[in-house]
Length: 162
Image 1 (cartoon, rainbow, N blue to C red):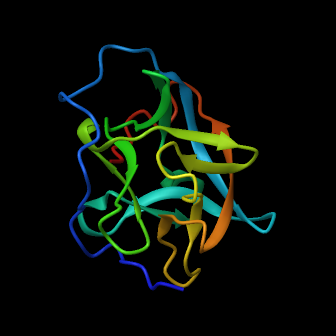
Image 2: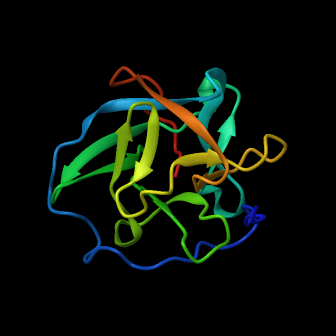
């Protein structure tokens, strides 16, 4: 099993979209992602590491990243409350998940309880090691279950997560 990059690096990845933002589209609700491993809850999707844009497991719901889903051009994009989009780095080992600018964003789909990037069918959201808690788009690691948990429109509105 390939040992992945950890969140102490700058994001490296291919540009996927043109422009600084997609055309104006309406977000679908706000939610947090609750994570499970083998059916047991392990925490929430949060951000940390260099630049605080790398996906990681956080144990407290209050530290979870608030997201909205945006449908655009046949894909569903996940956008943080701070205005960044979920992506993954194919250049760094293990394909770590991050939030970054629109130009790097890729679509994601929830298949059952597994979150998968549209452009990487073997990239189910996963965990390499519970010791580190960093999240990857890599089905070769421990694949996580994902559940969207709705957030009220004004709850945690002041949270600034990338």
